[in-house]
Length: 296
Image 1 (cartoon, rainbow, N blue to C red):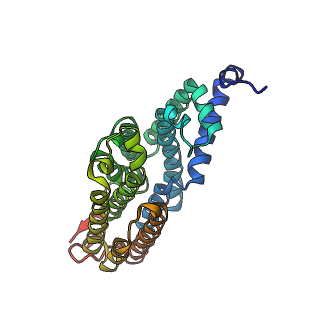
Image 2: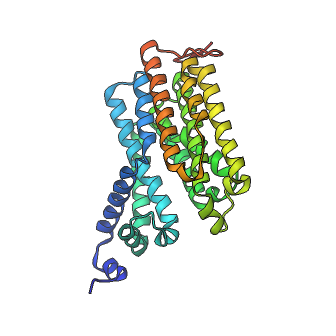
Image 3: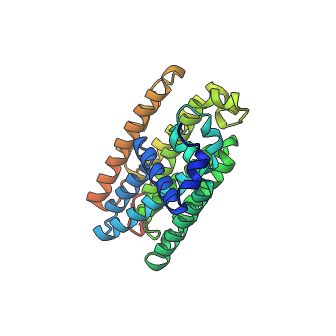
């Protein structure tokens, strides 16, 4: 007979349990490609011309920050995840049985991140406090509040990508804002996908409040806003792929496939934006031309 989670909790030291919880979070999220903000941060850092060692340091910080925010999300959702069919049951049960170790892991990661920022690059406190704070607020409350769930993810997409963006670089901000708009598109698709489960759970998300037709329109509006921003601020050609995504049909039975196509199109669009900026050192928007430290 296998030991119960409670017995396992007594048999393991808190440090070992905390390390296993962190490793579980990393494995689960990487397998689901849920740390894409790191790729965005890396792209921004390369495009604006940061030195390789600085990029490596910023990405290491970003990896630790992702572990913190996703662990916090899993910790706050652990009771709901125990009944979920989309989670890893063994990982969730282990986390539920080692809540004290999970709190310790979060505090340890927070302290380590604050120490790195304080000793090396104080501006990284901005993504730490903004990204970490937004994730906590989203997991604890905002993801169940219509309107604020999508708005929070737009802000979170900006905050997390600031890991790779010097705060004084107007060029970096132009790219980071684009990623925030893309994050709003992705969150709108996610709440539409989860709408039936949220209705059953009595949760009022944006998709529950707007209904399926209204949420489809929201996704299309978000794509149009992202395309318009790309054309006006970054490059007119960069707005074409979001417009292609806008033309894709949104069907209830194929939302996961639709989400994959949209991510592919927006990902390629952002890579094209990064390539242009890396080569030319500035954007070429129809409205604004943004260079490092200047806007014309």
